[in-house]
Length: 83
Image (tube, rainbow, N blue to C red; front, side, top):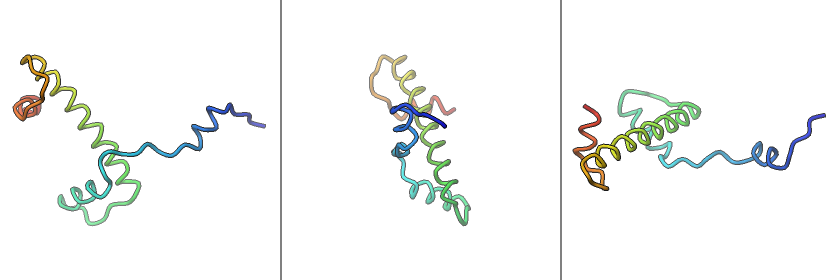
């Protein structure tokens, strides 16, 4: 017999984290780039990876803006970190 704590039980039945980027936006990007069909699981994985990519880019852009003594991220920061 398996016994769960209340926290473990809630975690096991919790809804998945809501994404910021929509699956439909990711599917449109994939189709625009040649994909004919995208499975639901693939769309979810693409969303997860896109959000990780944007988060990483943002952290690097924040560092670039900070280095230039700014709080705001500018397009030039994105250009600099993606060269």
